Image 1 (cartoon, helix red, strand yellow):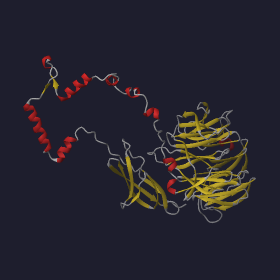
Image 2 (image 1 turned 60 degrees about the vertical axis):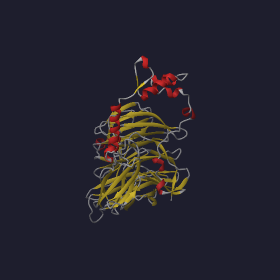
Image 3 (image 1 turned 180 degrees about the horizontal axis):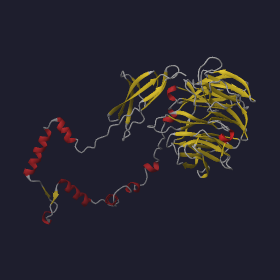
Image 4 (image 1 turned 90 degrees about the vertical axis):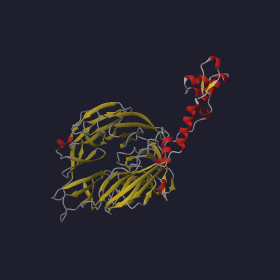
Length: 544
């Protein structure tokens, strides 16, 4: 049993969610669906979303950031557009190489172009190109606190910029070159970073190091055995997420405090009033006054934001399989109660489809005229008769029994079939009764429309890198199975030895290094079934 908060579906998107942004002051949420569609919505007083605008961008969306009253949409080709909350484009800014990533600091947008350039836009003037002006190498990382912007460069330089001027430069470490792999700041404005040397050599050159700089002075330098992947501000300093699944609290004095361990690389993290949150491989993990808890997601929740005013968490992600349906945007409250649940029950919130309301009594027992709307003119006239037409019904009965003669002198008599014709028909019926069973069934089934079987789809073959323990977490997903009649009733996953592993559309496995084959069997209500196979290859990760 595990603790879990009550989770609800906030949005069922039309395509996979790639980016998520929150404007806390205006309680506005924005997200991108697929590559081009951007949705903007406002939270109501009850925490529900009300869609206010949609932008169908002509280029692939690369980032979303709120600046004042605008949503900034970066793309990978032309640059940046500023969008009103109703979806109207207010301004367009051209950036050479497009915008790869960006952040908002000191009332300005700072962006990294696809060509390694650094740009600045303050919504009131022209775009400024800072890289060349400041004499910087290709920019790779950004962090900010207050009016200070920290820039990490491809050649290992780290500089601090204020008012478009370099005010501090980190001394280079080692003579063999280095690479800055992460930048971040604490709540008090201290800078932390991780660096890697280009080679493992004796002496001061180490593989991975963590540095903490306060007031432009080195406060701490530690060797690390893991890589820093994500970080966020925390009241104590900063929350750090690593590639080995560890989530640590960095205090302002440089102390590390382990908060939790997710067992897989941390995708995003957040902190709010004593609660710490981290997303990692289909789960959102949390730690707070209630202890540790967990939430399952249908995809990898690489997007996570927390509303400062309410403590409401919004998270989204995708399973990285282009053949599956989009995963929902989920939400829950950090301050809400946590309940005990079985691990298998954590997926119930996103597996429940929208329930179709039961028909009302008015629909079930409405006026008869409702039914007549679906009839032909002739049928409607028949049902609309005030008195039954007995003569007409008598004629219909006679026509069913035989052909009525047209001779007026014999009106009302029935002409019977010729005896020889009747004998031929009886002989045909007798021959039918003596046919072979297979032939008889074929004859009886003529004209019956065949029911198409479901087409099992076990997903595309996968090739994954093993983690440090020599294994990889794998998701087998059969939801791409096609059944035009919607009658799939049974699922079965089998390994290459024929052992059944699960009876659900999806299956998560931890596999060792090697080649693994699986078979998916699906069956519908009529007993028709089909199979499909998938191969997963787990290969050893190269050493650093």
